[in-house]
Image 1 (spheres, rainbow, N blue to C red):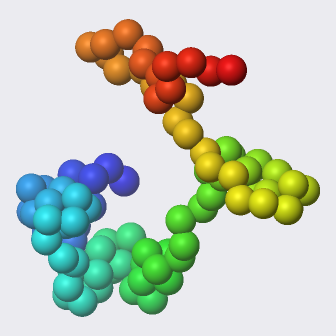
Image 2 (image 1 turned 180 degrees about the vertical axis):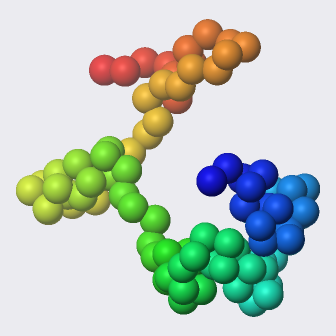
Amino acid sequence: MTIDDLCKASGIGRNSYYAKLRGERCFNTEDIDAVAEALGCDPFLILEEASAPEPQTQYASVASQLEDVLGKKIQIEKAAYEDKNKNAESGRENMD
C-alpha cells in the first residue's frame, strides 16, 4: 500500500498526513482509528509502535559498549556526511 492509497483509504488528506508526520499537526484518535482500519490492524498496535523508543544507531551502540569497557562516558561526533549540493564535510578539522 502506498501513502496515497493509505490517505485515500483512511480519508486523511495527503498534505494533512505529511504535516502530521512532520509534527506540524497531531494525529488524533479518529486519524489513528482510520489508519488502523485502512491497514487492517488494531489501533493499539500503531500507538505501541509510535511510543517505542528510537533504536540506537550503530555508532551509539558501539559507544555504549566502549563506555562499559573504559568505565567513562565518551562523546560521539558525526564524522562526515554527503550533501548532493556540497562536497563531503567533516564535523572536525583535524582528526588526530
